[in-house]
Image 1 (cartoon, helix red, strand yellow):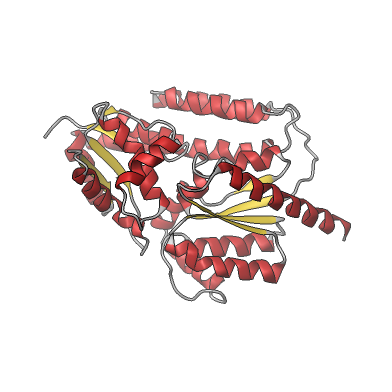
Image 2: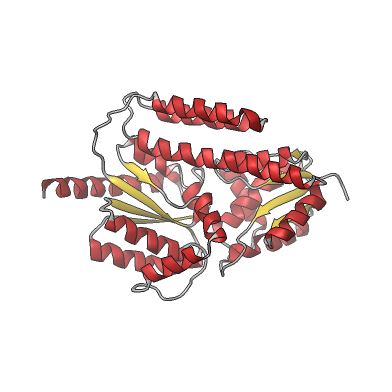
Length: 358
């Protein structure tokens, strides 16, 4: 077996944590570059036509790295459920090999025991090395999610425009460059201190908008046209419960699904796969918490999200909360998204101001 040179699909700021995982395992890593229209076009060329947008994007992410020497693809997949994403590794491996790319797949779609065996087989790392690599990567992952949430709070309140995004991007770069776990506590303290020093209008009251939907399109700013930043810069505070930690907790604590199903029973009494039930659960929660708008993000062709969209629209009609559903694929232009977003923000502001007068 060739010495593995790992590459993987880009997934927003989580890319940093995935890169760290394999660096700590002692293998060569070629991380994906930022997703562009060109990389998406590369994936579209060979992807099955009826598969959803994330499969096409993630294919496009890895293809350029084969020319740089990558020979092994790391693919994170859904371990269970009825979403087609659980078959991404199988489909991608097939179409890549048919396109002439002789590569191996490190496919995360089995039990934790099998995942451990696969990593050990591919990397040759010891048990303790694997454990330390995962621990360090998860620490970075949690910090990434933490500062993303801080940015959601600071961005619409900042006095110096652009200060939050500047510190956010600097922080991501520092997290990526950190190679030693023992230095992590110091870095974390420095990053959190830098956020606390952003000058903001502390008592400023703002309309609140929540993002719900499929995890990839919700979490990756290059895929959703950086909606969180655009809304924040317009004075709207963004909330997002769906992230990788949320998903991992659901896998570790299966009773969370029982709680979700119980809450959404009046609207849906069966599973639809993916994060369909989560979107309903989250929207009901945000309505109860008196939010001022909901944006539903989904890949075009994502059956779980398409199935539950009428339910979200029903909740919107029952509650009166402003609602916008954005379906994303390679044909969607940023200008069109911006036009719809501007109209939605006007509705949100009017809704918020009306509530303040009551």
